Picture 1: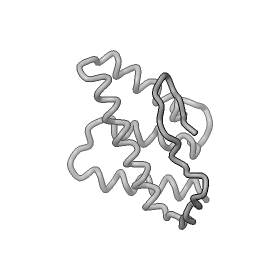
Picture 2: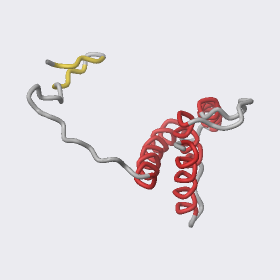
Picture 3: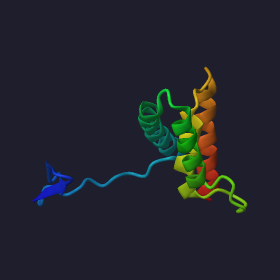
Length: 115
């Protein structure tokens, strides 16, 4: 079986007789690192698409703020808001030493949201 998307044909990556290994649970630090890794990858895409175009960057930030629930009247952000909130944090250049604080913030938010 093959997957077709806009004229690109890719082989099916799931073999019919392969059993997926059982995954172990991730802790908050591992999930935070995974979210941060996704955000860094997305940041590279955002920078590539908006390089030298301040209006385009403003549009991206505004869209992310909408996805992150910024400006909503709800009391607390939700778990589904967290990836957009993390990306908003990394889209701006992080000063030296802020990486550890960002990791701690993500872990704190995960702990709060997963209670």
